[in-house]
Image (cartoon, rainbow, N blue to C red; front, side):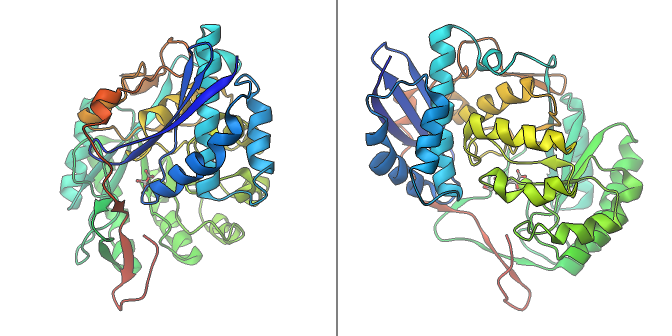
Amino acid sequence: MRITDVEVLVTCPGRNFVTLRVRTDEGVHGLGDATLNGRELAVVSYLRDHVAPCLIGRDPFRIEDIWQYLYRGAYWRRGPVTMTAIGAVDMALWDIKGKALGVPVYELLGGASRAGVLVYGHASGESAGEAVDAVGRYLDLGYKAVRVQAGVPGLSGTYGVGRGELFYEPAGTGLPREDVWSAEKYLATVPSLFARVRDEYGDEVRLLHDAHHRLTPIQAARLGRDLEPYRLFWLEDVAPAEQQEAFRLIRQHTTTPLAVGEIFSTIHDATVLLREYLIDYLRMTVVHGGGITHLRNAAAYADVHQVRTGCHGATDLSPVAMAAALHLDLSIPNFGIQEYMRHTAETDEVFPHAYTFSGGYLHPGGSPGLGVDYRDDLAERHPYQRAYLPVSRLEDGTMGNW
Ligand code: CS2
Ligand code: MG
């Protein structure tokens, strides 16, 4: 089998998605998600102008060799654009191999290690009361785990407070929206939010929260300690993780489980966090983390350090990435939880998929390959619209972390 064509497809069914389609001389094709929210066209060019010519004529079954060729051969290694491009190629090759052999990808990864993939949904509200009510709606849908985010009184546009009910899309057309942030105001509201959720729903539901890179290490330590009575499943991105060593301080002060990594692009971003047992869940995922091949290696390194996976699964990761993550989630020994921020109906129509939700769990299904398709006829109805993630400033105008 040989690769004969590489297409980079852009569509915007409610939000932009970039999809790689790799075609072969035996009629089998594979799909990969190449979406980098707010910087989509950078990956389009990286794939179309630089990677695609190097793939034509190669054997798509040589997944590992092609991964190494694209990683080592770029010279300029790592980073979100490079690793998203490599991730898309990798997903497509696994898809081709599964289809050609007539098996779902998880069977190529060692088979199923569990019956289903535990997922979490996203309850949010401008007020704490609205967020508490939203948790109940997710429990009614059968979720066993729920992330809870609420607005902060006095602040406009707090992270995680969605515009939709079952999905959350922060990117917007036009230039970046500017949100205002105050760690002090935020820190004053979070513990009481979780006290209300626990009072309302008890101790069984797994609760998660995302601080979205906005606290200093000592503020993060304080939040972790303040949340201990509410037994969170995890507290995510509680401080910017470029300085992995900063988590030594946070870890000294709190037993609240920590999750980090959705913005990491290779395992090299996480080795200190893992080697020193500074986190409990690694959030890297297939689209921004170099594909199934690299994520499988990252998960194995995490497993050695008793860290479990918690793959990123936001609305801006397409159903192709969700499917690829689910095949890995089903198979690896140290799976933790999968984020499942649902897509809009128009997105699901462009990307018909085999994965299904039931009773708080997802399953990738038994279709050969990844189990996702791409409807060109529908995709063409949704042209690309440049969009940006918001930026965040402190109340005095200083740039912060969105
Ligand atoms: C968030 C994401 O899902 C999460 O945990 O951090 O919503 C993130 O903000 C977006 O994926 C950015 O595009
Ligand atoms: Mg996050």
